[in-house]
Length: 240
Image 1 (cartoon, rainbow, N blue to C red):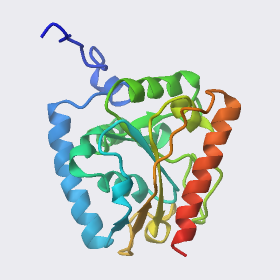
Image 2 (image 1 turned 90 degrees about the vertical axis):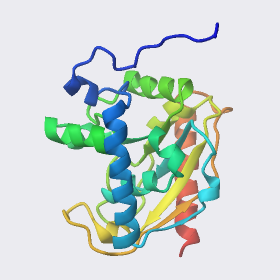
Image 3 (image 1 turned 180 degrees about the horizontal axis):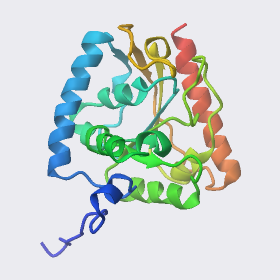
Image 4 (image 1 turned 90 degrees about the horizontal axis):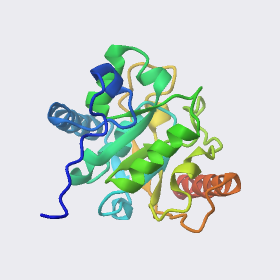
């Protein structure tokens, strides 16, 4: 009992609209209830409508913290990766979403925070401070980030270059990074389509990588991006 310490929530004192957009946001009771219902609905939707198949679940770490990275072609991507996690881990999952898309208006921000449990990354002002906040949270408490290092959805389904920003979060740490490749999401729901088509999805999950020996500097970040891009590319090629 002597080791017990009271720690207020990271978003304590923030107004609701500020909390939704905060990288320090924590899930309260209402969020837990709404997200549990949402996850059940999404799992049923993906299995029934898209006949989702997942290979490599054994590569998912047994407990947080870790990061999942994948190719990005559709709004289905984050839903699918989060749904592929074992049920006890899903409450720790935070998809990193474009702030200018998912947090631009109060209604959309409310949905993104309360249902998706997403954290915003503002693409026009994503500086070292925001990346350090993400890193601090990943290293200090059970956290799973779902990230798309391309930075935007591919318009033709091809795999783009991975940006080095992810390296700022995981360099010089033993946090596992799990490469994934999602096939079928571009055909089912490309960037110019609002309603998905009932086409199959196939998620491949690869063995996790760690970057404790990689320096937390620009050259190291670029090395991490290149290695993860190669890992995701290998998962793509394995299915061809």
